[in-house]
Length: 255
Image 1 (cartoon, rainbow, N blue to C red):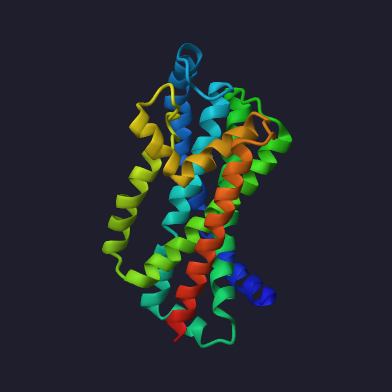
Image 2 (image 1 turned 120 degrees about the horizontal axis):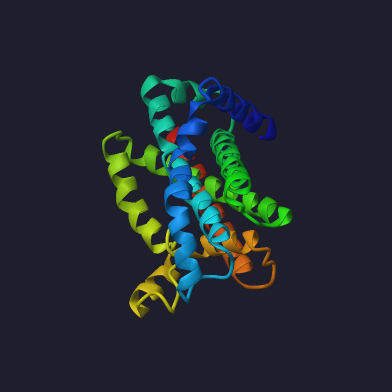
């Protein structure tokens, strides 16, 4: 299965490299947030109690990286719909490659793209905005980004193959992603001091809140038992469930 996964991964990666514009297009929104929202965040963090520990850039940069993985990987299902309509998916399914390998090859390609974009955002924050984050923490944050991309891309492929509609798919994603984004505290941390109790409770139910907290912990070098471990466990469980769902959907499509 490893060889089949590698072949699918290489095929999808070659297709991505033929059009490298996705790198710049993907990071455009986070860059705008860094340039236009970051300076405002700096003043708010310094004068408002209740924010998580760390400077404004160690709060905003990791959150934007998770946002990037959240949106780019969630829309990965569009590619499988294109392959489904053009017959490419049907031709792949008549090969002896396992359906799990078909999924994992594509998902790993999405994870690599998310990590590359995360590295570019982090380097920009270091060079231009004076981000001060430990090297080990940044490396660990990239693992979190990769797992987040694997989770969301697997779920995206499963949803796309289930509904098989280019019109319904983006509408469904927007309906789900917007509340997830707002309740995860990506742009403005939702803490017990800043938020009303009902909003804080709902945000803690959102699993991506814990992923964002874990990403911020890595950027401030906090490796103690707490946000990093809770977020890591939540993310690992979500990744396993999403891969299982995606693989099951691919296998059902073969039936």
